[in-house]
Length: 97
Length: 486
Image 1 (cartoon, rainbow over the protein chains, first blue to last red):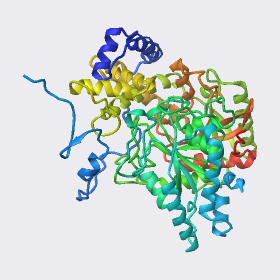
Image 2 (image 1 turned 90 degrees about the horizontal axis):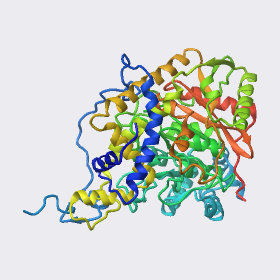
Image 3 (image 1 turned 90 degrees about the vertical axis):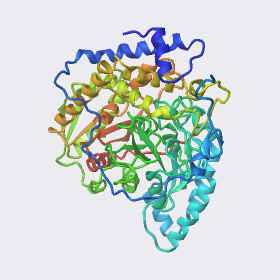
Image 4 (image 1 turned 180 degrees about the vertical axis):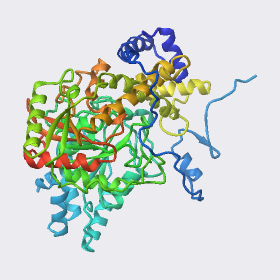
């Protein structure tokens, strides 16, 4: 199933990926090519087949809930592009009224 | 003493313990080799002199105290997806440029504790997505056997470093073949363990249900030594297993009486080169001469593996890579009007073409209205692929095939066509979908370039894969050799 430019725009928005001039055409063509290969999955009847999310038998692994030191605030902020007063600094989240 | 860069762990360990050489001298020989050739190979992104000096001193002190642990003083390279405290770690991506992890991942810290000496950080495809290392956000790496060709990927820097004698061992990660395929293309040994054998704590995640950390080395025995040191349960990774660490137990047991399966779908896979096929035929003959029984097996859903993989891996990556938002670490496009625009700009600028392509593909496959048709369908096909292997292993102890359908290809020859690049992994990604251990071992040359033999074993039977690979290495006399590099 080919992907339209509108769908590329929608998916890019969902993934918070900016688009630059030429990107829509580029990804519409390339993703359509990959999806054309993937469409062969539809040839298989999988009605009675359970899905596999992970392949080994390990399940519900628990450990004792023992307190241990986590990252310090300084360590957590050390790689931040912008930090202020012990917080990560970001552009405005709400528009001004 | 340039031949210090051609040793195996076993050989180096002997010289170290006899105190014929020191760990410091062993490191210096590798650094000298790196200085001479890495301008051309470009296996490394960064070097860690502060670590190698300190760790070599510690290793020499341990040896003087009579410590005989096998990895003490062994020079190692680490793929740029494994966090090392204080060492810039970027997953081959500009979006993480400058990131210095506040902690060291479990696999690396276990090797540090075992005495390995870290030389530096190796190049890879961005977020381990690729089969040629050309998707690195920094620079390509060149195949030491022919500098105009790719080393494979995504762990191409680690493979090239070992192949070129720049490191004795290296760590890689394998999500669809990213250890085994570059090992094959550079003529070294590379192993992907069973999913859950090695803790993923401190690994920058690509596709969490498929990713595994594993070793590159110049002999099967060396690969077993490194794997054994990393393996085992880790409370910091709930998917790591507490099974006994028995990976090297049967290393020297030979293949006499073993049944080795040759899957016809792998043997005649589309695009397999005659020279690769000839090398694999010779390897199969050699194993048969060594006493193995060769049997035909079938993996009927092989043709659907790539399609299932290219839904599941991108879906998981689109979720894992959501955390790269320019707020907590890495690069940020700071001049945006609002937070959404900041995310969009940072991610457009920070991610390369292939990563953006996979994030979009995965987001699409998980999006409302398409989930059942793509993601759920792919997970069901994953069940069919796993059942194929289960059935095949009822008739054989291990599966043997080529690792890659082709030898190393010229730089730039596949970058314009994503599907042609994805097809590099057609013989390896089944092992990831089914969670199997697999190893690639050199099995000769075709057109002057290395060919790899893949051995896949049932889950938790690393010992079987290693045993077959070791038996092949011994029966054939084919060894991983250091590439001369012009």
